[in-house]
Image (cartoon, rainbow, N blue to C red):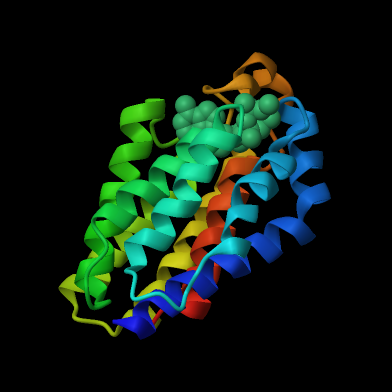
Length: 206
Ligand code: ADP
Ligand code: MG
Ligand code: MG
């Protein structure tokens, strides 16, 4: 159990490092599509991961809740509450022992939370375009009884393909839809962030 908590904490801290390093890249994408603050928003929310206490006999969901709450409460804009909801809902459904089937359920619940809150559909050029194929990939891996490490690698690959596909899409949600025409040819920053979250999960959780 402690091992599971530490892995989730390490995952969230790695996200914090990645969002710190990729601040400018994410702001730049959002400068084309929105108001240029997406990297700043993600960095602010995930900074909460730096103060996670991984030594207490806490559970993985506590770590996810702490960072999820920081995203919901401290980050203005569309993405904080949406990424926060993803972590909160995934955390609330996190399996006591990480298995492919258990994580697939947690991630599906996280996606449900994002869609309930943001109403985006696949093809709208949002984080949902990275998260949906990753969720489907995890569910397929669960049906095939694939080991968790392999399943998460495949899910991250699927998220990155979904992220890349957002370049060809016209934005229909959030601020970016106001610049629908200019949005074609540019990756959606939220889809890039969701891919970062899933790639780091593959590196830390197994
Ligand atoms: P804001 O647009 O408020 O400045 P950010 O720039 O941090 O917030 O986040 C923008 C990202 O949020 C987009 O790239 C997109 O992926 C995501 N997003 C915006 N609206 C929605 C929505 N309704 N559903 C899902 N994701 C959304
Ligand atoms: Mg923005
Ligand atoms: Mg903003």
